Image 1 (cartoon, rainbow, N blue to C red):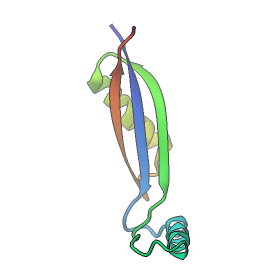
Image 2: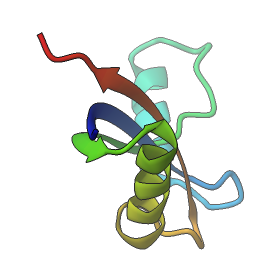
Image 3: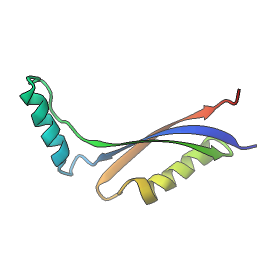
Image 4: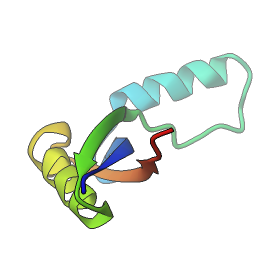
Length: 88
């Protein structure tokens, strides 16, 4: 029996990749007077629902989706969280 899952996916630039958007945001934050902020990195947040046989299958599907479409594995990392949706 298939199950429904809710996924939250986070895609970020690898730490070795320059992040000009993060640098610009950090500069803006400091100009606002928040001097204790550093290391700002900008990324993507994606949510989706998917159907899978089990959690392992859901994770496999998400890995393939992230590797092939949502993230550029040369310059980006990704991670995700999934929750099984309970039909009510």
